[in-house]
Amino acid sequence: MTSVLSERLSWDEIKELVHRGKTSDIDAFGVLGRCEADLFSYRAHRAKILETYASVTDELRSRLFGAPLVKQEQNGGKLAVDTASDTTASERYVLVMANEFPYYVDRNIAHINIWCSNGALSDETVEQLIVERLPSETAEYVWFVNPPQYQSIRAIWHCHVFVRNLKPTALVAKPGEAELWN
Image (cartoon, rainbow, N blue to C red; front, side, top):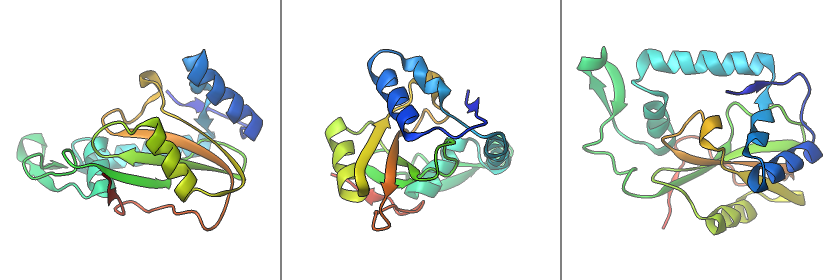
């Protein structure tokens, strides 16, 4: 469950939360949240997706990685990933993109997600992607994977990256611009 925040989280608060969450107190991640208006938009967006798709995961796999869809007549004609022809589950596609519904953080902090189509990325790979693609004026970033109790999308591995003072030269992709990763 996402928290409702009335004030933006500062860089120091985010660093502390992520440090605590990664070392001693996974419930620290429960403090992360959105403002009320953004949370309302997020929930409305999810509801709209479920009018057309069998699941939010199906919509994301298709939109982020290009997974083919099939209409499921037994499910009211909703769209689902066509597992018979989907290669995104067997091949590794990676996408570094801005979080579409970011947590409520100071305006100079970018909330980025790194998505992987077929399982967890190593810490080394995540670090490599951050350093190569998300340059910061201050070289400050933190990242984490939400523990299961705070994951809204469990079926597709992704991590959250907060970057302070992200440079305009950052290589942030858009949905559908995933790349095959060896």
